[in-house]
Every structure is written in C-alpha cells, then in structure tokens.
Image 1 (spheres, rainbow, N blue to C red):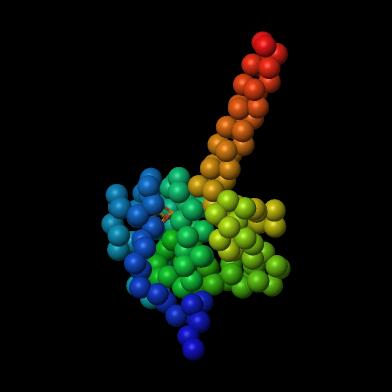
Image 2 (cartoon, helix red, strand yellow):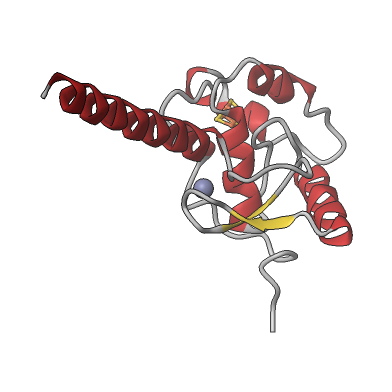
Length: 139
Ligand code: SF4
Ligand SMILES: [Zn+2]
C-alpha cells in the first residue's frame, strides 16, 4: 500500500487557487525548481503572500505535494510533519475539525482562515449578547 506521506500526489489543488495568492502573478515555474536549483526566488514571493499560513496548512493536509507551498519545499514539509509527529503536534483544527500539522505547540486552528472565522463568530456572539443586554435594560 502507498502512503499519502511519501507518494507525491497530482496537484489537483494549487496554492494559486487560494484567494489572495501571489504566485499566479509571478512565474509559476519558480515554484517548481529543478533538482539542485534554489527555491529562494519562490520563497521570497511566499514571504510576502498574505495567505502563506493557509497555503502551508493546505499543503501539509494534502500529503506529499510537489513544489514550494507556503514558503516551504517538499523536503521541509516532510521534516515539519516528522517533527510534529515526534512532538505530538498533530492536531484537530478547532474550526474545520480537520487534522492538521501544527507548527507551534499552542496552535488550535489549521490556518488564518479558520482563525479569522472563529474571531468573527466570537465577535458576532458578543455583539448579540451586548444587544440583548441593552434591550433588556431599555425595557
Ligand atoms: S504562500 Fe507562496 S505558494 Fe502559497 S499561495 Fe502564497 S505565493 Fe503561492
Ligand atoms: Zn481549520
């Protein structure tokens, strides 16, 4: 049986599909450096990309995808996963409830999208409570 961690999968999802992704505005070839070539040019683009955390989270959740995603190469993502397994950093996202590889011990969301969604939900709940409280006071 093949393991999703060791068999590169076809890139049916691409980081460029993420809304706000910078890579579609650059040379896509940068993100697939030849063996032995430097991934630094792609990493430089990723460093200023606002969806970088989600891109990395997506790549980690997809298994072994080729190329630079979220500022990491395939080998670096393999190392991140290995380290996460060794330190028990495999988590279930509190937002989407999907498993993800945490890059920090206190990570509870798989990426910025889930974190922002949770923040908006908390704000909506506290706004609703405030409205209820003030309408009760007014009654
Ligand atoms: S982090 Fe890099 S690979 Fe991911 S969407 Fe942004 S530019 Fe593309
Ligand atoms: Zn999530």
